Image (tube, rainbow, N blue to C red):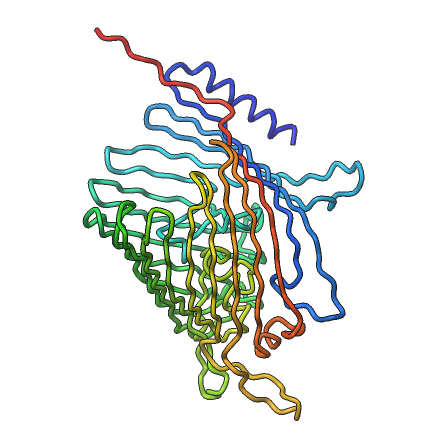
Amino acid sequence: MKKTLLLIVVLIHIGVYSASAQFTVDVDFRIRSEYRDGARIMLDSSKQAAFVSSQRTRLITTYKKDKLELRFGIQNARIWGQDKERANVGNVNLSEGWLKYQLSPYFSVQAGRQHMVLDDGRIFGKRNWNDIAVSHDLAVLHFNKDSWSVKTGAAYNNESNNFQEAPYTVNYYKYLAFAWAHKKVSDNLQLSFLTSVDANEDEDDFKKIYPRYTSGFYAKVGSGGSKFDMQASAYYQYGKNPVGLKQRAYMFSIIPKYKISSTLTGVLGVNFISGNDELDTDNNENNAFNKLFGDGHRYYGYMDYFLNIESNTKGAGMRELFASVFIKTGEKSTLEISIHNFALAGNLLATNEQNSMVAIDKSLGNEIDLQYTQKISKDLSFRASYSTMLAQPSMEALKGGDHQRYQQWAAIMLMAKPTLFTSKEPTVPNK
């Protein structure tokens, strides 16, 4: 911790005394309290709700000079009360730590720990609802010219400072590579193509590597001033899954949005994530799509039953239909009302009352989400959320509990993102 603070002091001095450099220090701070009475898992009458408060504190420094850019971000994420009284518990990690250098007017290279967010975050997202979020140790080559943006990058992970080949037991990929190309066709149309490979070691033989490929596209129709816009994406997954099964899976999403008036916007959408069919006993493939590092909370219901769709549906996949209205209740406030209808994509077997294995009903239930957001000032905002899941009996096969018990979740969150310090580029006098 002392070394971290010393480095921050050094960076601040660099920013203050480097006359030709830009230097900023930002804070990303939030506190969230949640009433969990059926979030993530379903409860039954024997279980009581939990009330949990969490906090994330980030300090982010950015340094720019000529062709060089550096970013260093540290964070502390904690549950209130988790540390022993008066204990000095180390809980600081690196959320970002990268260097970017402009090689030419169009090319730049970025290396280090970084967040990777592409398009709508379906495959590569920040997962910012999670207090830790997602970071990658990557080297990325950027190309930007006119209406084109292209990124290609790779990562190769080790568990320790090895001097010979050794197993990688961290629950993450062994290596990752991707290529992404984005084209702004017009003010009302943007298209992207993504292909990636994430490879995982065999648990019993680390010399066996199973590469899994994900390829697809993203399209955005409309602009900020349009009454109608739409986002759509589709991806196909192939290769081998992390346990070595042949992977053949897909997902697609279509989300149209219409601005009804200056204060009312309506949204409809469908998300489909393929899954396995346990009635097909001859199938030796894995047909369950894995969304890799994609966002979950903002797409699949605020009660987070489907943060990791492949595991949360036991490989059966998911079909989601949803409708939302966003009501502008004030100059700086918005109310969201959403309803989600969830169902399995494939057939899932479970034991019935006669102790026989049968396919459960695919219908899982309906979730209702309410969320109010208020921007208090330039740097401070507030959010209040309430959700309930009206579950079907099939949900018990996935989440346990009692579907007849009322399941609900509520949260309040305070977010502050001030800039503590910023240096200004010096004005170059006219000669």
